[in-house]
Image 1 (cartoon, rainbow, N blue to C red):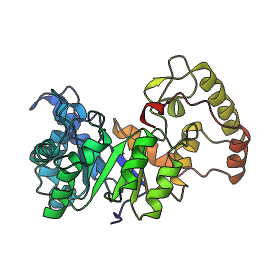
Image 2: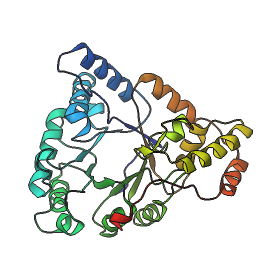
Image 3: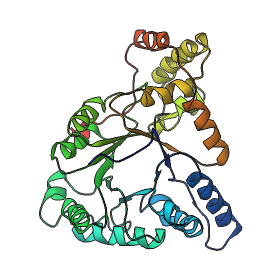
Length: 305
């Protein structure tokens, strides 16, 4: 099943973080959520564990105000038990029930298996495992489609290869710095799955540029990576475009990617994102990018090979 996505999906991992129900801070978060729903982008992406459940709760408050249309535009994910790490069929069903209760909806267009790191692949696929729970939810009609969302490409390749899932989401592995997810996306695309590419800015340096403390993939950028990105910044400047625009367009222009997921923290960021998405990038810049050679990514997925 291919979802009717838009080029951009709006991420809400930080929405409502550290807010208290009924507080002014929560009201600010709900107002921002309403702005996200008012955008032209098809889906908002959340998860059971984002901001300790507050992301879904805030989205639910916004949905209650906006109504039916908003209720069909949220993608969520099931997560392991936050205290025990348990992740099996029963936990999947509980996680889903928690999610729809917070959102105030009966069903979801897409539900991902999220970061299945506390169980092995074989455990996840076994009878009574997480995948059985997801299939059960799809067959019951409570979700239209199921996906898998994580990072390590070796692990993601195995899940995609099962043929069970309708969608895949990989983060930080399809950027101008690290394109290691390309074979996974190619396989998923061939299977007719919906492909989400998350974190096109590498969760840091491709949005901020080179600076002290710059991050890539939730880790400090190495000096070698900083130097490579500095060279890329010079290429971008020579063509009169910004590094963030190039980083975003790298994902948007790929025929393997159906939707690019970008996390947002404010209405200003949403405006900036739309401007970056509309920025034309000269074809010659991509040729120059290739001439830089492979970037020294600091992500190591060898443990999941």
